[in-house]
Length: 454
Image: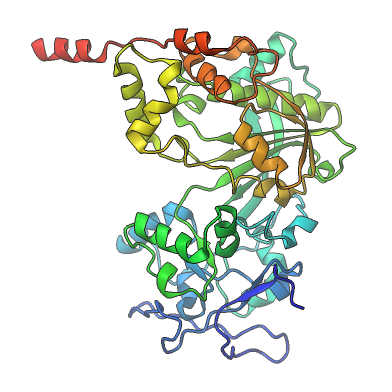
């Protein structure tokens, strides 16, 4: 009986292959005309089969989603997420040759990730191509034959320089060791940038709907941007036009699957205002930098620290929506209050949160994580999503109270009252605290009227 996780996508058509290596012969799309591949039964449409969940990348097959092989594509969408639009601008401006194929000779990973058992289980990895960093290794025969196959994961190393780490050294919270943490305050990290690659049947299962309903919903809410979601049910892979994620690792990545070695982890969702510019209306940057400090300490003890940074700005509602919510919070009757914290988001966006977290644990499984000793997060949604996939979490670490900015008391109070894990630090938050907690008053409308009068 065929393993359900090894599902071959694409119509059962005859691929022209080289008898020596079994690699299909690429059909190069010419740029002087548009080749419509919007229907599976169209003439010339012959996508490369892909068996998602097969442990062997050669048998599984590569993800083909470049313009060079339009009739043989086995994925909907385009590489680089939303940045693919800028590629179109570059072609329109005459700055990029649409026939250009990247030189990947020197791009291979600088450290090894996997393979791990979870790679062949779609219930654990369905939003990342686990072989996305191994393009030049696993598909070198394809590349040599002229296929344009793009990596969806890049693996490298770097030094991270944060003022909070320099301050921690001055106060002796962190001690430089010359290996993980330098005297300058810089820390050495391994990191991986990842573009999302969705296996639609499993994504639908996680959201409790049919694949057809998922496709129709995305098609509708993107104003028909991807008609192939409707017309090409034979293609099961989708490269969505959303932000990806970055994995930062302190310590030896090879120790991550070893449950006997301490692992500290934070999964962080992007907040540009706080993470980059230090806005004090939320706890995002201080919680992130606290997690980095704990990751460094863990690595210095011989363990490993991981921060997974998702591009999910404003709870995946976007920064414009987030700022509209800020205005609503500050202008509502009675001012910014913890009691109405979530209501304000729902009033503006129609929903409190669109992250959901059902897809979030995948990069943990990609790394081979099976146990997290220290989870630097108070989110019940993240905790439940991770543990429901079989990963054990030993300790949950809340943000220290002295790191919470004054104007972020509204956020932390509301979240803890509504279910976030506050530990002993926030055990006193009750209904009275919810009603009493207020944020900063900017007097928006008074300032606007003053400007008009002047």
